[in-house]
Length: 237
Ligand code: HEM
Ligand SMILES: *[C@@H]1O[C@H](CO)[C@@H](O)[C@H](O)[C@H]1NC(C)=O
Ligand SMILES: *[C@@H]1O[C@H](CO)[C@@H](O)[C@H](O)[C@H]1NC(C)=O
Image (cartoon, rainbow, N blue to C red; front, side, top):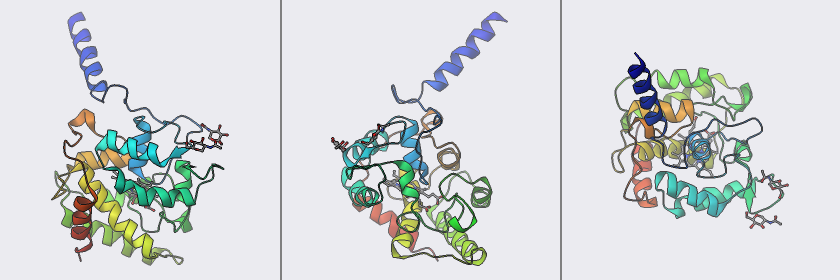
């Protein structure tokens, strides 16, 4: 009996320490800044950027995504510079994660896991919105064709429900990119198709699923590779 107790404790420790050394997942503490982006929040929850989500510079963002999920720096440059334009830190070279909630800059209506601003706070994870999204992820993986369809279904539902629904050009690009980003980050670099389990962990726990077998890619994710996945998502009708 004693042996069983020790063995299961060891198993628990092994599971917890499967996160990379120094980058164990920790839930955000009160006062930490978090964004409408599940991956940015996960990168902070693993300490690849400041765990408090505050005063993030572009180089810090670039290093964090490189270390955590092997995205090349230039993918972050454009979106990072847009983030700096809506900064509330008082330092034009940094932003807080929560600043990214500014409506119709990057944040947009028709998110997969967030309310439209018309219905309440658009920044935190919203269980009801996500429930509708995840109910369409019925297989062991989420193919790009399915992910693209889920995105379009959400936009149609948001448009029907929200009398103030808007999606500007940048919002449209962001909506397509959001889907492409989770596909390429968690799935294959060419064909996406991540495990459904990984997608759920990213959205529901804002955690990178290292403990479940996710491996940081050896080859960096480049803009060219991301653009090819974006094109596949955009082609879904
Ligand atoms: C590995 C890189 C990234 C991945 C996998 C990723 C993933 C995602 C996903 C899946 C969403 C959609 C959330 C939803 O619709 O409910 C999202 C939204 C968002 N992301 Fe990221 N993201 C990444 C990098 C970034 C970066 C670098 C920034 C900015 C500095 C950013 C800013 C945002 C913002 C502002 C939203 C909210 C858009 C909305 O209204 O839904 N993301 N991201
Ligand atoms: C962020 O920067 C501001 C302004 O420079 C500073 O007052 C604040 O203490 C910093 N916060 C953190 C958590 O580093
Ligand atoms: C603004 O932030 C940058 C990047 O973190 C930092 O190097 C610089 O010292 C900060 N400036 C001030 C005035 O705090």
